[in-house]
Amino acid sequence: MARQKTIYTCQQCGFQSPKWMGRCPDCQQWNSLVEEHPLPTSSNSRSLAEPGKPLKLSEVSGREEDRLSSGLAEFDRTLGGGVVPGSLILVGGDPGIGKSTLLLQAFAQLAQNGTALYVTAEESARQVKLRAERLGVKADNLYLLAETSLAQIKQRIKELQPAFLVIDSIQTIFCDSLDSAPGSVSQVRECTGQLMIQAKGDGLPTFLVGHVTKDGSIAGPRVLEHMVDTVLYFEGSGGHPYRILRAVKNRFGSTNEIGVFEMQEQGLREVGNPSELFLAERPEHTAGSAVVAALEGSRPILVELQALVSGSSFGTPQRTAIGIDHKRVALLVAILEKKVELSLAGQDIFLNVAGGVRLDEPAVDLAAIAALASSHLNRVINPHMVMFGEVGLTGEVRAVSQPELRVKEAARLGFTHCILPQGNLKNIDIPKSIELIGVSHASQALEHIFM
Ligand code: TYD
Ligand code: MG
Image (cartoon, rainbow, N blue to C red; front, side, top):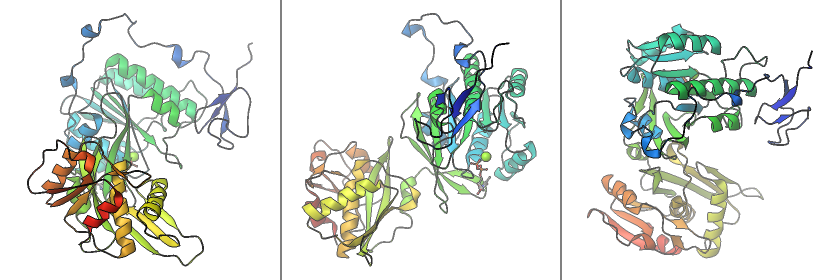
């Protein structure tokens, strides 16, 4: 009898090695390699249902209107305009953030276009039913299946022939032919592989719910993220009712597109006007608060940045940033010291993006500098002023993308002044209600912002 092959797989990143090691050489995690017995035939050798044949690009069918709407505009927007037939979509997020709620609400709507199957591998069908009652979801075409065996699930899919499928969650289902536990990298990979073949072969849009590990990535991250078409993250910070659905990978649309929701008693409510929501609790006439016109995907949102600069009582001052890259903040502080000549040495510095949003674009720089300077000088920024612009290492203010969209959103919300990079002033067509002030250096911006 042939000796059974043994392979060691890292449960963190999916790295495989023929011998055991204490530390994964790929992701540097300690003690993460687990012994596994791979199948004689790997799932990679199986091909999609139909044998491939070269087709002219023009012969391939598939149009924009093939997308199906989920009835939740924010969900559709994040997907790139609706659900594409045959796509495999991973929805990740912290436990309790609302993934099951979101998918149940979306599926109640999708079920109006055809039969939808919700496989609940974590909760009982009764629990899901109770939640559906709370959400006021009524859908005749929505089926629930409480099952964890992949073979059984596939059998039921064959019988029911659903038009949409959710697996909640991918880490709790298992494939009989593997002896490793559900949730291990090889199980997750094998199950996802089989579901992918089914999705592509039958054109069945499949949503997978994925758990997030301690360090914030989806368990079995690289293997999973590479296999699926779209990766959505459902984020939100504890205590805030706002939830942001963000596309981090999308083969059928733009990434960085976001959908904004608010978690309420009756489930998730779409927030069509996120700027209004993020600015609702803004303290006016207080030093340290600045409003930035940021861009998330194709959508402008106005967000408040808050800074607190205060004398440190310890030798090493603290630098804390929430919702914005802390390295970027350190850089902006250095620019303020050297190029704007504000002395921030020995000061504790805190910078926070209000509402639990995360801002990653450089256009936020100018507002961050304004908020820091405002707090340090204890001077209030004009509450009707909004700003955006990237700040370079010499303190120069650089042009950013889509200035018109940003200015229009600010004007729509009643702002009367906008500070923007001089380079963005060309060919800009804007409403009369807002006055534009072009600046080319950070210190020039500070001359205009205070009341
Ligand atoms: P859930 O969808 O179960 O989260 P996940 O599947 O991501 O683990 O959502 C659970 C949380 O959502 C729970 O803490 C309660 C809250 N919630 C509401 O506030 N209102 C509601 O109507 C529902 C259904 C949940
Ligand atoms: Mg859940």
